[in-house]
Length: 117
Length: 117
Length: 117
Length: 117
Image 1 (cartoon, each protein chain N blue to C red):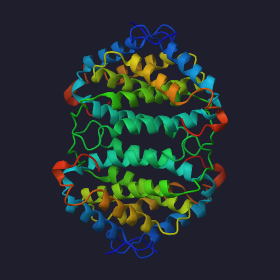
Image 2: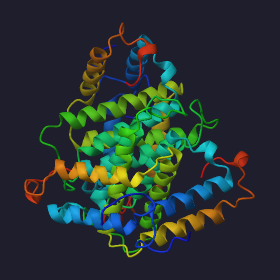
Image 3: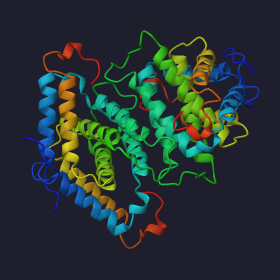
Image 4: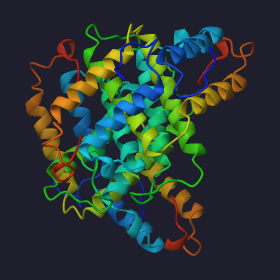
């Protein structure tokens, strides 16, 4: 169940890995959906901090801090998926992408009309 | 490349699907890492709003609003991965989990000593 | 123009103090409304972190970290007020409270019906 | 105790007005510091949403939505001050500004060296 690369690692691989981590430390009691939602927000803000007082097109030369925070956001999101015992998170994401595709038809939503996704 | 279920869908499947969506609408010009970090924070806050003024153990009866926001967070995170052209996000996550495992050894971090991950 | 206590210090006193601080360091060029909105979110998340994995009724014994973050949020908000050159922030707040009073009539919004402000 | 303008309205005026609003609706039971910290984050994110996918120097032509969210952030912050029964929030802010002044000496922190406050 080792996590190797983006092409071979499934959402379930992450779910199992993260579940195992939490179970081993008996942390389920702290991982209510609400607590995880709070944690997710804090990590998202730490990710945002990388861009504080930087210009719109800023990309950090060393990506380590940024990708570290991205991993934190991902891990808490997977923790939340597990905490809610969602049967199929992939389907939920796929349906949201589908909904977005209908909301923003390719023809109408040319870049120049675009304000906000 | 359809997204079916958690056991068969890889991170790369999502990366491709999301990339395709953005390319078709020519939205790359708006998707700077900074803009995506802002978007991620807004979606994380909308997710948190589900729990506003609710008790610690609250779980919504209808999960649709919550899972919808979780999908948004996931999609923006994958957009950020793509925007940064990360070669292997899976490895970054795996390394973070490894780092956490060293920081919180199973033996020492019994639940009762636990304050904050 | 010293800031002494809640009963004697006006919003304008804070606006002047904060404006002076920024002018002396020539930081106006960094303080676009958008940059300040980002900063405000980061400080709000640091404030929230005090409550991470804590119970609903948690109040820290030592309030210093929490009040420090509250001051940061306040200062960035005043910076934003100045950056937008708002003539009268007090009136804006008063009108919002008025709007809330109409939205949540005292008689109807007894505590037991209350979900979300 | 009417709130008129920035030059005449003190922090205590706001504290009293907001306390009165909450007392009349018996909402103190929902206003734990943790709940208010969550609410503050959600309002801060709504404020940030005004700038989503906008350029660094964006200022909305109509400021109403933005100032509305600023009022929400302010009101929740004052609610938090009240909830913690802080004796003197003004002094806390003044001390934070003092601390910042020492951290960022005027001479050294010329704008050109400035990265992040």
